[in-house]
Structure formats: structure tokens, C-alpha cells
Length: 454
Image (cartoon, rainbow, N blue to C red; front, side, top):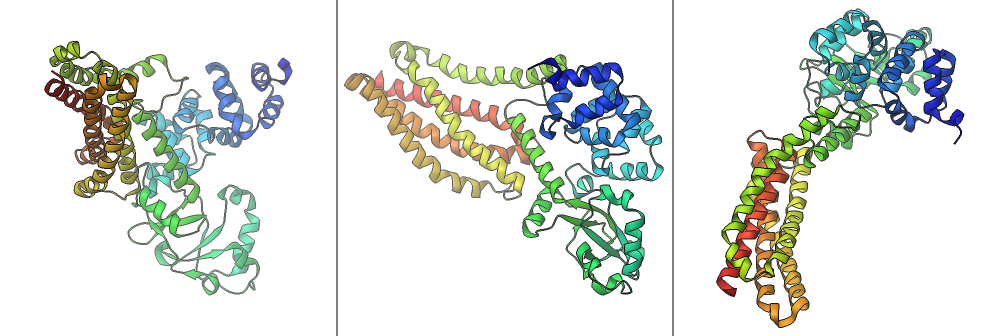
């Protein structure tokens, strides 16, 4: 590909030359899904310079670009800018994105940016920052349209026309109708406004007492709400029924996806936050070692069982072939149960107290799968060496059956137990499961071998 056709090269030339028109044109030619790749391929200095330029000429475009990044990436980009440029870009973000990005800043730096923003917008961001990121208050936006019930439709349509440019970024689908003290009374669809005589009041065409969510509701409740209601967005009220914001279906779906990504990373041993290969080397090393170092101790526990039965392994060396298979298969069976428990916990379908319920559901799976896996491993041993390994097949197959049952039951329960004591199940379930299945598997196999084969 010629250099002139390379989007990164085009962008670098525009940034180096300070050519605003070329910069806008280069960004406009890039498909939306390529934006994150393009931004991360720029050097840190070039990236900062690009957003400084955009903050001067088109802060709305700069804010749109940050929407394609994770909150942590967006915060990293904004934190490298001057306070004025940062405030210009943050000021154009949706209110929920503003709060999310500024949570990554030191309080003093975040306040410096808020001081340079519109006072009303800054006050809303400060209010939103008080809510948890996974609650309705943390996911809602404060850009919405509400009008008193007594207002005429003609007056409302005039307001929409006069402030069309201001309302453009509100993504308006509904008009909310309020009563005394801004309490939510009803909702109106936009198409109903156009088809109704202008002298009628909003109250006459509103849907009264619409479905709503409370600002303190958590994400699982919102997921159930949108599963039950085919709404683009839902009004958010406080405990007194006052309209305080709007939560969009897309925001809830994005929060669910982000939580799933965090769980996946933690389950894979990436802890302490999101990791990308653009993250500083020292941070990446520390985060990974924080997971790997404790695992050395856990693995030593499993290895100690093998050491105790070293004479058995020396006498029946064929066992060494099957121990890794036993460990891996039991771990896989247990991780399936772990994944289901974590999923049900995140959806609110399971509570940490549901130990007996979980055990009752996993026991039949563990028994049947254990018999199947144990039989397979026993047959494999018999096919490999025939009658010579017949007893070895019985020992290893029996150990596989028992350990698979243990793995499935423990895998289903460990997320509940960890949740109960306040530890993230996605972070600690896997290493604990591995240790337990290894210790039990090695002990059962080697103990049976000692009794049957020696």
C-alpha cells in the first residue's frame, strides 16, 4: 500500500504540519470501527497534539473520538492535554461519559477541568460522580427534554424549533411531562406531538405514570427492566419521584459487555484493571505478577501431594503419564461450573446463600460426567497397553470419576463462597479450583494406586 494511502501516515502528516483541514479529512475517511486502532498507533506526542488541535477547531469531534475508546483509554488521552483543551473536550461528552472519564483523574485534576466547564454541566457531573458506576445514577444521562403538564403543544413545538441545534445531541425520542417539584407524571412520543392540534396541553396526550427506574437501582435490575420493556430509554427518578435523568438501553448493554470483559480478564489472571499492550510496561508486569506469584504457593500445595507418593510413582511410572490428563480434565470440568455460577450471580439468578441449590444441580452433572470421563480414561489405558495396564486403567478411571465429581461441585460452589466473603469470584475462583482439583486428583490417584497396585 502506498504511504499516501496509509491512514496513520496521513494523520501523522496532518498533525505534524498542524493542518486542521487535512486532519479533519483524514479522520473523516476512516471507518468508525478503525478509530481505536488508528488512535493507538499514533505516538503519545502525536496523539496529544491531535487532540489539542481538535479541542481548538472541533471539540465535538474530539469527544466523539473518545467514545470509541474505553473509559480508561479516554482518560489517558484527556489527562495528557492542557486543562483548557481537556475541559473543551469533556464539555462535549455525554454527561455519563464525563463522569466515567473523570473518575480516573486525581480529584484535584478533575476539579480543575470542571472549573473550566459550563457551571451547570460541571454541577451535573459532580452529582453523577456520587453514584456507583454500575447503578442507574452512574449510567444515566442528564440530557433530556421535560416540560410541565400545563404547557401547550404549540409552545413545545416552537421550543423544539428554536433550540433545534442545542437539542440535536440529546437523541430525543420522548418528551417527559412533569408536575410540581419536577415529579414525573407522563411521557409523550414525538410523533404524537405532530399529529395533535397545537392548542391542546401536554397532559391531554401524555401516557400517564410511565414505567420508570429509581436512581439507586443496580445494573441487573435495569437489564431485567429493558428485557421486559421494549423502550429505547427509561426515565430515572429519585426516591421522591423527581425526574433526574434518562438511562438508555444502549448504556445498560454497554455496561453489561464491559463487566463481562472485566470478568473475562480477571478469570484469565489480568487483575488491577484493564490491560492493553499500550499500557505501561511496569504496570503490566506488576498486574500479572500479582496473580502469578500467589499461584506458585498454591501449586506447591499440589506438588507436595505428589512428593509424598514419590515411591508409588517410582514403582508405577505409567501413572506419570495420566496425572497431567487427570489434572487438566478435572480443571476443565470445574471451570464449566465456575462459569455458570459467575454468570448466574451477575444476572441476579443466584445468591451466595444458595449453596444447597447449587450443589443439588451440580451433583447429577458431576456423577454422570465423572462416570463417562472415568470410563473413557480407563479404556484409553487399556487400549494403550492391553491387560498390562488393566489395573492402572481401573485406578486412573476411578480417580477421574471421583475427581470430576469433586471439581464440578467445588467449581459450582466456590464463586458463591467467595462472593459471600467479599472477594471477586472471577478473580479467585480459577486458582482455588485448580489447587483443589490437583490436590484431590493427585491424592485420589496415588492413594488408590498405592492400595491396588503395590
